Amino acid sequence: MEHHSNIVPWEIISKIKGFAIKYAKVNEDGTLDYEDYERKFSSKTKLASLSHVSNVSGVINDVKRIAQVAHEYGALMFVDGAQSVPHMPVNVRDLEADFLAFSGHKMLGPTGIGVLYGKKHLLEIMEPFQGGGEMIKDVVFNQKTGHCGIDWNDPPWKFEAGTPNICGSVALMEAIKYLENIGMFEVLKHEKMLTEYATKTMQNCCTKLVLYGSSDHSIKCGIMPFGIVGLSSHDVALFLDNFGITIRSGFHCAQPLHQVFKLQSSARASFYIYNTREEIDRFVEVLKEIEQF
Amino acid sequence: MSTVEDYVARIEETCGEEKGAVVTFKYGKKDEAIAKILKKAKLKNSLSGIIFELAFQGISFRMFSSGKAIFKGVKSKEALHDILAALLL
Image (cartoon, rainbow over all chains, first blue to last red; front, side, top):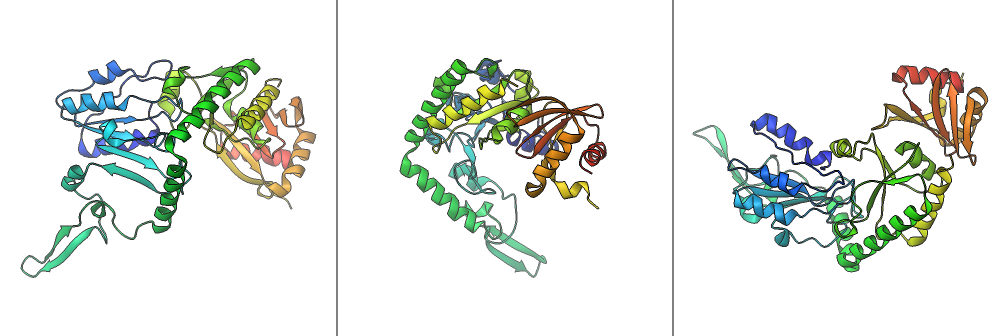
């Protein structure tokens, strides 16, 4: 169920480091097959990686359950929080995550910047992956060896080589403050209200509509993958575009999950703090119109 | 002399479906492009003046009044360029 960003980097580095990757199964409704995931662990497992929320289906994964199994096997837990941190309260300690990453652009912040959380003791023993200014304490030339002795800076600076994205950092901090001021419980509550309202309205009003993924709202946040029978996702997206309604069409950077759904592509409506019930009414009106095509 | 590039702002490959391309016409030229295409291609279906299902030289495509068109099953960028040239020039 992963976004390509939680597949491709592991595939790249596995070729460099020579480790094996095991993929857990996903059920037909887009939920994780937890038993299958747990069966994948062995004494050789070094790291488990899982998205907190699927960017296609909106399903919220029980990350803590997998993290606990990972730790039993002595493995670390990485969480892709790109789709959860902007939409709900997230506590890395509660999740028992060793690492968690999220993006600025999905939470009212700028593109090209994100956050990687890591437990301090793990960051301290990790080697830097990039070299440059700021990430060192000392670089001293040794006359005898003809080399420079280098002392790494403390985390997080050890991992922040070169001049940082200062403008992006300031803007992302302001976005975080803005969301925290609203309150992440309020953000989640609003999205759940809109998702439930949209589901009900779409099901009541649209005859050619197919909703993909789990219908259990208790494990979902504000993402709705759907299709209109007889139309491609791109047709639906471009039709809505005429009315100033923006959705996503295609694979949403999650092609393997579309293989599970046996879909060539899907349309995806997603909601956030700025959306209203009236906008959903308008969205459904336009869907009803395109159904006539 | 006009070229395809005078009318087309960009062409993006779609992901999923059969391989397709979304053609976005330049904002200032979209009405002219749409009018030319509607004149040359065969109209198979339309809805509310917003979406047009068209056929031209054996290729079916859908065009939107917002100034975008989706072409599916066109074998290459060059083939798509040739179709656009035939429709627009």
